Amino acid sequence: MAIPKKSESKTASMTTKPAANANSGSKKDQQICIGKIVGVKGIEGAVKIYSYTEDPRHIGRYGALHSNDGSRQFNIKTREFKGNVIVSKIEGVETRNAAEALVGTELFVWRSTLPELESRKFYYADLLGLGVVDEAGKSLGRVVSVYNYGGGDVIEIAKPRQFEPICVLFNEENFPKVDVGAGILTARLPVESNDDAPMMAHKAARRK
Image 1 (cartoon, one colour):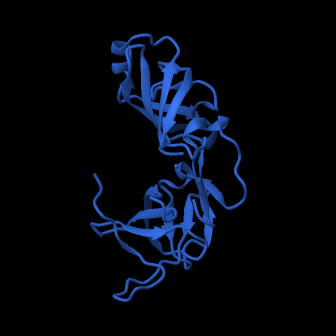
Image 2 (image 1 turned 180 degrees about the vertical axis):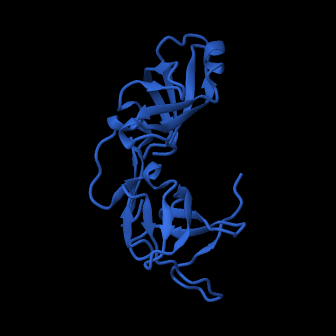
Image 3 (image 1 turned 30 degrees about the vertical axis):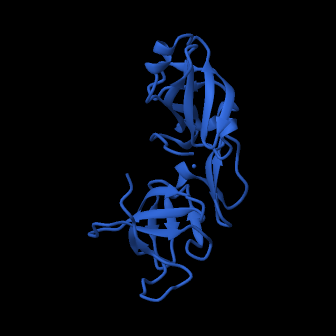
């Protein structure tokens, strides 16, 4: 399963691999967070944007970005990029002070502007909040995070009456069925073992 980072907001697929965060509402009306202004560069109002899209250069591909409350729109022109951070000029932002005032701003697009995905591929945002059940329909918890640090997409599941969530590799063996419309992720969770099993369910490490 891959999760496309589509925008590419991040995506996941069952064969591998965020949109990052999504607001509530119907899927088409959702806002998808695809980046965040994290710094400035130079004196002419350029900003540094951390992109959540699969290809960081595509963050401006889906039209004007907007703030979470919709009060501001941002037309960006990318100047350079390194890793997931791109340096962009925002239309109307001409000074360093004006750019500094935007640091911390999350950048959103409407879900309806993102392309449809191939079969068995999902936006990260589609998976967040899904109820997780076993193949008999017994509730196992809820998806609270999806991430990929290079070893494949990982689903973090908060289980009832368990303080620490568990993290499970997102593939077809562990998750044979994904029904986004019904809000259900069917899981075949690996059994924790002291042995080095090829698939592990393990406690989530605390992350800063």
